[in-house]
Image (tube, rainbow, N blue to C red; front, side, top):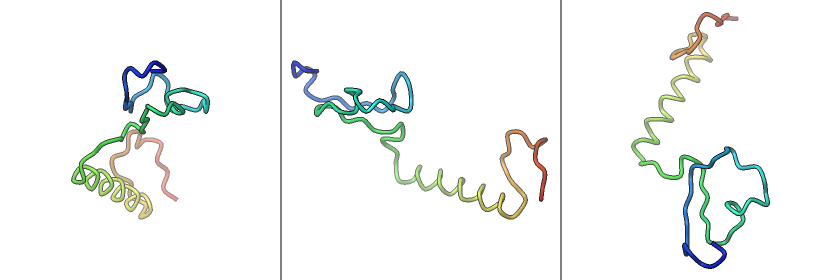
Amino acid sequence: MAAGRPARVAVDVFDAEPLTDTADPLITHPNVIATPHIGFVTEDELDAQFSEIYDQITAYAEGAPIHMINPEVWEPR
């Protein structure tokens, strides 16, 4: 990259995540665009994902969680 090839690179998946080394060239190089893994998503998909997340939070707050991975550990208040 220092030689100018490739001229630019965009990366959204890394060997180790999250990137925490502030000296890592994938974060600091001027020709690199580093985004979180959700660097691109359609508006419809984003709406669907957050709608489901909201439904799960609401259900939990109401004391009736949904989509639980390990329901056997749930102890209602």
